[in-house]
Length: 66
Image 1 (cartoon, rainbow, N blue to C red):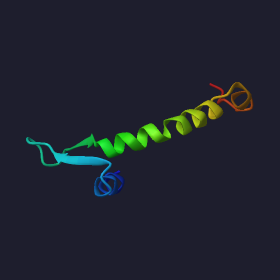
Image 2 (image 1 turned 135 degrees about the vertical axis):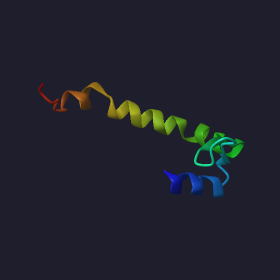
Image 3 (image 1 turned 45 degrees about the vertical axis):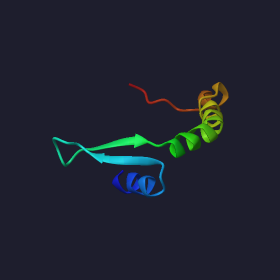
């Protein structure tokens, strides 16, 4: 996760901030640039989720027996 958040920070999608009370903690804040990207891909992500959770796809899945 650290590598991903560092790259997202370098590209301007998020801002990484160190916690004032604990240097080990980092707070992530999405930037306006990051919000634009999220808006532009939200339809694609929703379509993917709909496809993955479609009744036809789920009916072929094997569920573990308890």
